[in-house]
Image 1: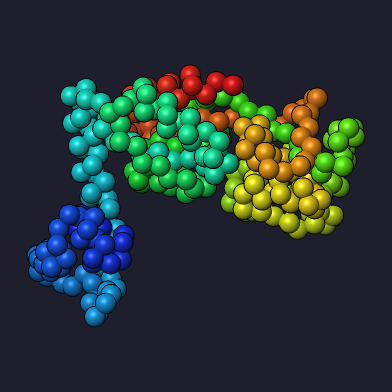
Image 2 (image 1 turned 120 degrees about the vertical axis):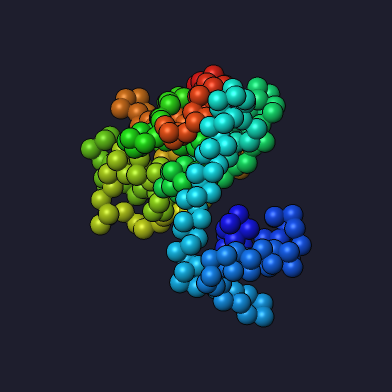
Length: 287
């Protein structure tokens, strides 16, 4: 079943065999053996590829559930023996990863040298999905989520700053009453930081020029080109402005903020280990 799930994930016999540390003929034989035991084909083979049969799709869904349960049992056994976790699958959102990931990995390596850490950078919705299905153990992102199945632990709160063209330097900070009419530049759909910025600046979509970007770096470059103004988190200032000429402004009052924290499944048998890891990260990242 693991061979089959790996084959479906990678879509290639050779790659699946490499990951599974067996030969390609051996992998093919294992898939055929599984089909014989089930009494029906799982895949339709061609010279260079394959597609899943209808039953293959249904069987794959059950495979994920069964293998997930097996993994959970293994984790429960480890937890019962009070063993430390040996591997950590960590998720992190793009508006945090470039600025905190080096610090996160360095801190974890120092305090938990036994950990084999794998990192996935993705948007919040993807990370939450991966936490639920067990692909990820913990994720660093913006809170709150309000998911009753997830443990949320706050690490720190961070201010947003205004980024505007350099010719605006020494000009007054825009009044909140004028925010809706300003030419705000935002991240594209799917980024939680976009939603946080929208909630603060509440731009008039009829007035705002449609220049959305896929990264904070692009937003800052667009500000330098005098296409508008934007917000970025404080942690991004040094990295995103070192090669640009823009004006960075901190708000005097009603400063927009975000809460940064860690999530994991409440039902995980290793929740106590994740809590210990989060304590380490929280201490290192207090701002």
